[in-house]
Length: 218
Image (cartoon, rainbow, N blue to C red; front, side, top):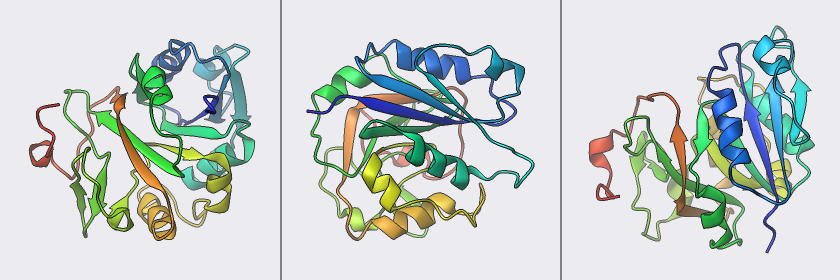
């Protein structure tokens, strides 16, 4: 089983949670991993981040503001490991994220895990797209051709990511994650690992609302 990981983190000018996210990765004690940071490397907070596990990819934000599709594609092109975890700079790993992934099925192209909002409730993880996102039961076997991957965080195999890049004509807020999902979902192996939890470092809002979660007991 391949247990090596590339963690790709995209960040902007306000990267106040980035150190927290990086530390959450380092705490996993993964034998082979890398952390790829894509953004403006001249930001003082970024200059202070060092380590043999860090790969900094400088990105000129002035070319096209909010160009996160390009940033995410850079992660796919630069990642050296088969398993790629893509994060916005506020999505941190639970302490047991890696150990739970080691127990999980490796036969997937794209994988989602449980995402917990700052208030501890579920946030836009394993969802259908039915005009709006709708929560699916973590332990159901849904028709994944009806599902959607939120851009906040996801896991993907490197070669599959290269085969299905984001549309770089789109910017943040233009439905780029939905369009990307729709390009893949007729032929992907998309699975959910609810036990490898990711936490948002700030409270996120939007649909679906937490009261529609079919796994409220978790």
